[in-house]
Image (cartoon, rainbow, N blue to C red; front, top):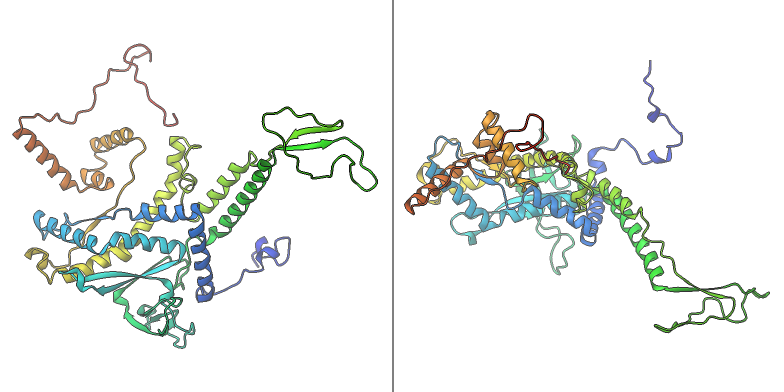
Length: 470
């Protein structure tokens, strides 16, 4: 017996389409030459295409934003005051080294370069905690001659017997830096424990990444070419205001006695014009852009955003063709993509950087005594920045229902909004105390009273509901 698959049959009408398909290994298909070509083309597109630039910026701004917040409220070995002291010390250090800017740069690099490396280093200019994180571009982690003589080394990464990265070959200078008198072969071997390699592993054997925008490159090219062709056609039609047409016969040489073909005639402004007999004055009919131009752009933009899980209204920054319900539904895939990306950033980057920082911070007087003696190491939970809801009143009512029915707690609701539930309660108590000292009564948060609905559904007391589509 043998299985029969039409797509596996040789020849056929689609044979030319599959000519480049082959059983390439992950290392071969992502060779240094291929990755360099993809990087250069993606960087060029992002630098010259407003849509590509907007997509990359939206990826970084939505994923990282102004930075996730570390919360240590669940650590039983620390008091509330000690936990807050650790959080403040961490936030201060993040500001000192511009950590969130570096992570946003890393997300952009993953989109148009395919990968980035964060290297742990020491910066004496920082003061108390000298730990620093340096982003390293993909070109600087490589064999200087692109020939891996060591079978354990793949594209500048040395692996141990178990297949785990053990060392990274980091070139001291970018291979294409315009610096005279330097040796581009100079490099340092950096222990894998001091390097974070941020990339997407699409195959089991992948050790280097390709740009996220790779499948969208052809869409960017087609969209730019089509747009430029439409603009050129429209510009040509706009620059030619009138066309003179003649019904006179053409002589044997293909010419008209009274005028030469394609002659340019200047028409006086705001004057009546008398044409010779047999001549007609017509306006140039503009055919571009056609009514399908916008729809074509929208379909291509949808195809471009699909490989990133980004809905078309985010790609175009235009929701004019969406109502509230459809716009929210289109974002379901986007939010799921964000959850996966944030889980990857949390486990691969944030947790490791926090442990690096804690290891050095516990040797200084930046942390309180209890935090310096904390064992096992303190592990924070991360609260990510959340976008503003399109309809805050509906979201607030939904939150109220969830809390009243007991399907959630203040901890989950505050985390979803990017807040610490303990900070919320402490701030509420602080406001009440300050208002009492001033003799001001703060009204409790009570739901607005509504009249009962009429049995017949009419008259005073009707309970109307606004549809999401309105």
